[in-house]
Length: 400
Ligand code: DI6
Ligand code: FE
Image (cartoon, rainbow, N blue to C red; front, top):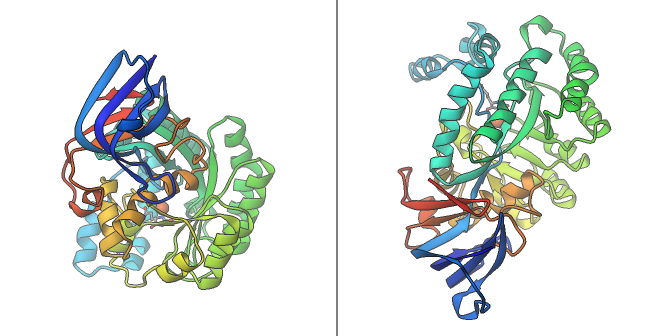
């Protein structure tokens, strides 16, 4: 049965930019878009259900392609400490940082992790997110990573949002492997990834390539294992230094390389050639008060697709609004509002390997869209937070 949605304008994002249609009409059939175009060209036919969108601007459902939404504990105390001048290194030396979230995550039950993550995920959804990627990476042993990934799967079945899971076991060195990073990488490759993949818990594999995390050589071992398991890869790269991790990611046709403040033009060339998406994380840039900007000119010059995500995590980006990230991407990283919206729709879908079905308003794609009561699409990056009046449709059905 076909449903007609009309009296609206559409920023379809079909060609990676707004690709706007003024006075548009959308026909959905089941979970998919059947037709979209100017209302004047609407095919004649029977539309048993007609929805008046009251002049709203319709965009694809927002896609948050990089989050660490599942975790135990709280690190606002570290936020207070850092505001009093305590450094990250001092906090970590005192047992804080990722290590404290690992302890809290290992101690929490699946139900406790689900309950706290569901609250955070609902905040993202309140802001128009219909698809989200969630990483493990605070368990750092097989049982705890499995627990996290099971919670991630459960979030996708119990909430009206599409969830992709990413195994980030190579996020940090667990205490039982202190000073034995190579041994931990071996454990990830020979034990953890094969088991978790066999249980159907992993859609992609990620790692943290950084001087204070894992080297390119160690990351490559993880990538080779992911390749052997038939899993796509992503990478936290060039956040704090240049290790050319993003070029390594490109060599493995990674879906994305993420952060990228310290990437080089050669990295950008490699990413453009492999189609690896540059995922920018303005929340971490802002929260850490970073000063090194990602090389926007090089990314644009070489045609690297740019996505924008929240990086929702307790330590460096406690962000509960993807729309606020759009503003930060423009204000801090100098994207245009159009680039930012493409970054949270079609390019975010590409960063998740979902661009064939999600991320733009085109016939045949999944009917995930948001009807925003705004004057112009740029308003989505313009307003700082808040709850913009909207109607959200997921899989062709309006959700409250
Ligand atoms: N980069 C980050 O900024 C986060 N992880 C990563 O790879 C930090 C996560 C945390 O501090 O809990
Ligand atoms: Fe991250």
